[in-house]
Length: 291
Image (cartoon, rainbow, N blue to C red; front, top):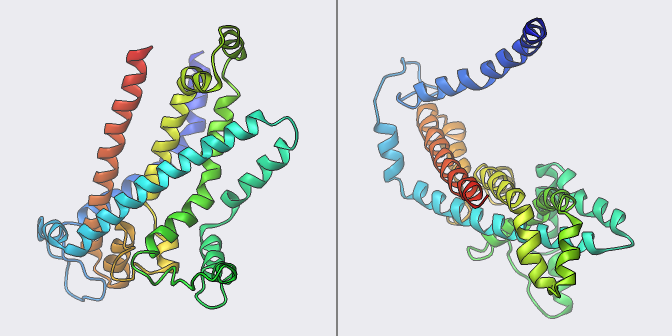
């Protein structure tokens, strides 16, 4: 047994070392740079400035706007995607014919690269030749500046994200529905329970852990929203779609302020860790107490 464990350790050692190199070292470098005034084009040495970058970021109105935009996007996108994903899973679960075909069609948006999705929707949302405005013109509506209007830009990006990532929620929740014991539904039917009662008292408790996981994974992913915003709006108009990652890109990559961008990245990491830790403690702690 001991020889087998040693052999397994030898096999996993290269993978562990590789993961450490890809995660720990970049993280340490980022932390170190966040306390400096490192500017990429500067010929002078990097000077240690302590918490000045962090203080400047917190005082920046654009960063606070980016945090608000990110949280707004996160809440709306995650709630809509989880709700629609559950509805789609229940729909397919209850279908006797055509379910396999619909399962494949539902998963197609998730298989597309985010950049491709953004470019497709950019053409569809075009002011003049976009198919959406052309369709609305039939009903004498529009045209709308979907990506250039302060009130419409963020909702448009949310719709695009929901279109692409609702299949992810659907996939996990549909798999969870397959594990719900059928005898519980049969017993509830004998007792005369309604469909709503079966859903609330049987389905939801049995798949609640999967719902928690979907919310956690999608929340972490929405914090990293960048590609769609950078391609479609670049944070505009008037910073109405600027997210934390877009802010980091503008400061750290586009403006080459590496130290400042590293500090903003660490703030985002801390925010994600705080939320994830709190959410896991509340969600799975409550699950354990109920069991």
